[in-house]
Each structure stands twice: as structure tokens, then as C-alpha cells.
Length: 158
Image (cartoon, rainbow, N blue to C red; front, side, top):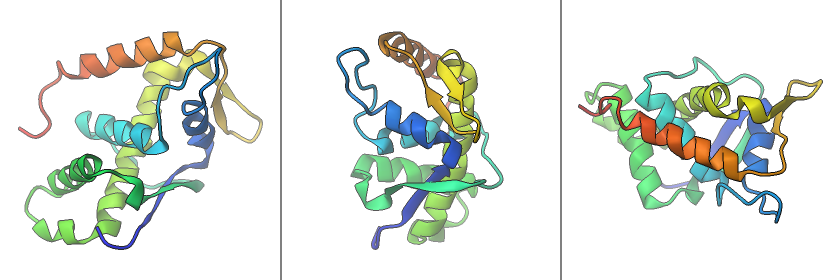
């Protein structure tokens, strides 16, 4: 998509992204890179037709040039569908594509926290959320079941 854009998430979620990438003997890594969880969150937000109006207190998570071609295609398809397939020029506006993706990802993370991560979440005094547990295998299983259950919901591209 040309020059790399900064991809932001709410500052309060940044530790969740970090923790789910850490690989320890007691708690294996669930996501290889931040981009993988970001795209999952974006897809969940889009699939459930929920996105935030704005990102509050955001922090940079990654650069857009880290997305692979499949992830780029997903983000572009979501952006195109979110403008009603009527404005193909959005595909030439990377900043707008990523802005839309960030809003869906924000809501997607909120949904994941509520539906899956809640028992594993600790909120610090400054409002930052982190995952606190020793064994991620249970969380990974819950995440897989949740994502699988979304397949039973109608196709958002119909």
C-alpha cells in the first residue's frame, strides 16, 4: 500500500498484545505477532458489525507494512464493505483503510475481553489491562471455540 502507516490500539490494551506474544515454558505464545491478534480483533468487530467511534488514548502497536498480503486483503475488504462497496477509491487511501481497521479492531478487542479474556484480565490503577495467568492453553482453547462459533453467524460479505 505504499508508505507504511502507524497502526494504533487503545493504550489500555497494549499489554494484552504483548502478553499473548510471549513464549514461556509455563505459558506458551498464542499469537506470533501483534498483527495477527490485530487482524483477528478487526475481523471479529466487523463480523459482529461493531466498531468504535474513535480510539481513546491510543498507542502505536505496529507499522502497516508488517501485514502480509492476505491480511492486507482482509483489511481492504473490510474497509470496502464498511463504505458499502460504493466507494472503490477507498482502496487507494491506505490511511482510511487502517483507520477503519483500527475502529473495528478496538471493538473486537473489547468483545474478546468480555467474551473470552475476562477471567484472565487484571486492571492496573492507570486503567491498563493485562493478562495474568500461568497457563495459556486454557485461554487458547477458549479463543479457538469462540472464533469457531462465529462461523455459525451469517457471512458478513453476503
